[in-house]
Image 1 (spheres, each protein chain N blue to C red):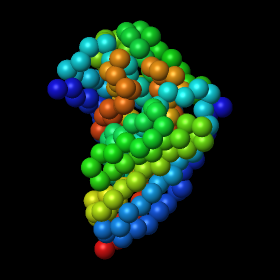
Image 2: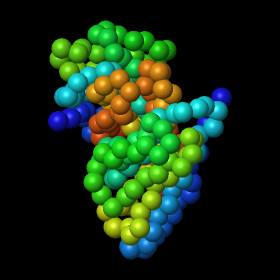
Image 3: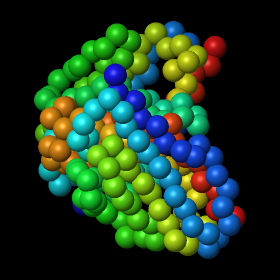
Length: 113
Length: 110
């Protein structure tokens, strides 16, 4: 069966510090991968998606970046965090050719102080 | 542009039926999804509609009218554990990412 994991689960970072969130999927090949952010009082906002290794599409311009160094690994990064980067970050995957439902990881709660 | 609207909050009592509405305006349409999200947890998939009509899955049903840009999620025989946020999401084109609404927080009381 397929599983998705992301870490760390919780982190508190000072403004201006770097960020790295990692997500891995197991039990499937060539998945579409996504990073969403859920801020307080707001819906799930799509940040990045990837259809293959090294292929990243950005939905919202910001100080975050994403990379996909391996087929089942998706990384979200920032060189300098802003207060507005606080939120609940969710990695998700979708099986290509399926109806399109997303399967989410456990989430990473980031607080920038 | 993309816009998905759903009520912010709803309340209901155990054993009752509740309908959560969602309207969407997207540039292209290729499916409407409903997710359940308990506080502090990741969303989990509930249902999918791409054609007009009703899809039933146990206590949960979802309806779609593409001409009206409208969907609803119907929850029957409510239980306390159904207290959660319910997210409506639309897909613009096959293979693209889902666009989510802000979610409806449902509180079920005894």
